[in-house]
Image (cartoon, rainbow, N blue to C red):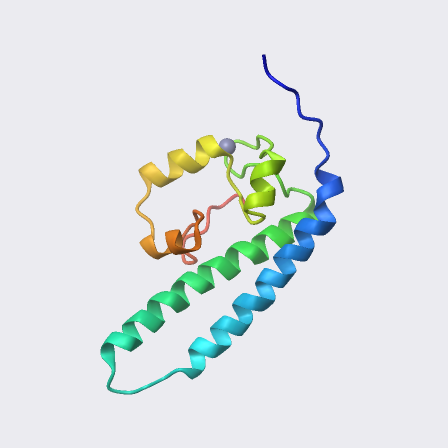
Length: 133
Ligand SMILES: [Zn+2]
């Protein structure tokens, strides 16, 4: 038997927004720091720095989108099928934009930047956002 979860997303929004804003501040700081670590001649370090920068940029992008979607009222819904994303998932990953089914679908169909997984959640390349976010 399935338990029906009441939709209490609005109760969670202030806390989720707070977390997203703190995460955004962290990413901005991280990117500023990465931008200042330039050591000419060390190609390996530069490559790693570039990869971390790319992943942090994508993470920041996700956060910005989540905050924007809060403003326009579409936060908490899957961007692909518009199903409600379970609150427990949003609490785990506030910037989540796809329901579990679409998340799974998207990751199997699309080639993605592997580094995104370092941060523990799926994303899309910043250069290729879905049209409907
Ligand atoms: Zn979906």
